[in-house]
Image 1 (cartoon, rainbow, N blue to C red):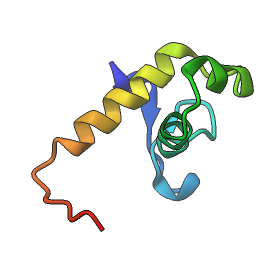
Image 2 (image 1 turned 60 degrees about the vertical axis):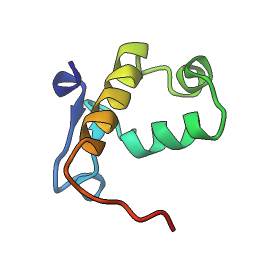
Image 3 (image 1 turned 135 degrees about the vertical axis):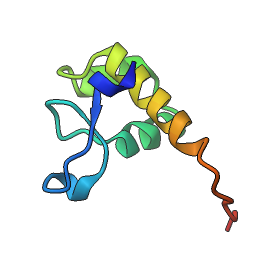
Length: 74
C-alpha cells in the first residue's frame, strides 16, 4: 500500500522518505502525530496530503521498524 505513496530520492530532502509529490516527510507526519495532532489537523495544515497518504506513511514506518536492528533507547 505505501509504495505508491511513500518515495525516497537521494537528491530530494536528503533522501528521507516523503509523501509522493510533496516535500512532506514521513518523519514530519510521525512528529506531528506523536505531538498529539490528529490526522484531521495534519490534513488541515497540509491539504494536498490525503488521509490515505498519512496511513501509508504510518505503514511505511511500521515496516521500517520491523528490520532486524536493535535500538538502544537513549
